[in-house]
Amino acid sequence: MGRLVFLFASSLLLMVAATTVSAAILEHSFYAKNLTVTRLCNRQVITAVNDSFPGPSLRVQEGDKLIIHVFNISPFKITIHWRGVSQLMSAWSDGPEMITQCAIRPGNNYTYKYRITKQEGTLFWHAHSSFLRATVHGAIIIHPRARHSYPFPKPYREVPILLGEWWNANVVDVENQALALGIGPNISNAYTINGWPGDLYPCSQNQMYKQWVCDQILDEGDGKLSRTGTRIAQ
Image (cartoon, rainbow, N blue to C red; front, side, top):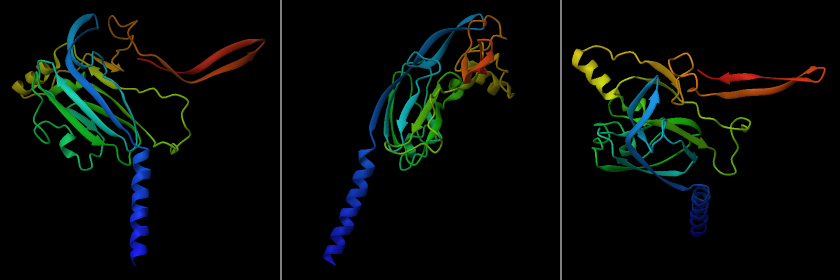
């Protein structure tokens, strides 16, 4: 009996060790503050994370633990929601304001701690206070554990694509006006890809996101080569 208990305990320890070896603790700091950008012929102050719009992409492996320190230097209260993350045993780090936490007031900070469990793929983080999510957002890219394969052929390259909307106004004012009037918010002035409007919008001919996919070089004969593919651009 004692031998069976010993073998069972040893097996559990080996399983825990195998799980722990391939996991890491990743620590990041998010600084939410004002950022001045130019879109659609206008210079505008927005709220952004780490002086970047969109915000930084988080690249992790399944099983990793994330520790994110959020410092609110903006004039607005804020929380960060990790959309799609299961939050097993860490619901207090989910981020919805007044549901799992109070808002982080200007000049204050909050630390989110959670583990990525049995999830792979691309998820999304964004502000969960008012319309700030329009400019406070970014990607969460979850790779398989070390020595584990992708559930599909491993891609040659990964490029996050974030679709959004742009208002020529303070997005907090847009929301407050809608609430005060009891109507829907004003329609956005542009759609964006990775924070950039397309060349169909004013003053945006040189302000758009471009990315070639399925790129091929075709031999047309007579020594002529042509390039084909799909360009993601707006």
